[in-house]
Length: 80
Image (cartoon, rainbow, N blue to C red):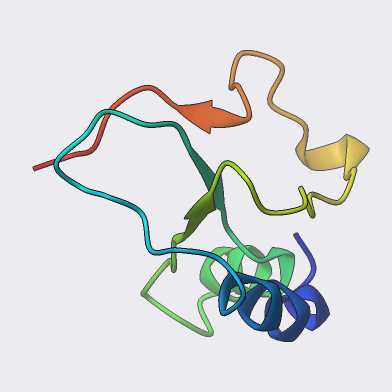
């Protein structure tokens, strides 16, 4: 996703209930394109992962040179 989408994602998330971590549910996982480039270029050492409820508008950005065809839109489980 583009970093410019983070503000809109956060604003929309405030209108929804929090994710219930006690019940299995799908979540959307994102990294920002700008953050990926910064890590690849050595400008940052930390890759940020953004997670969102499955009920929020999907905000991925097609980047054909960075495509991963074996990765789905939703995580199947939480990492504990």
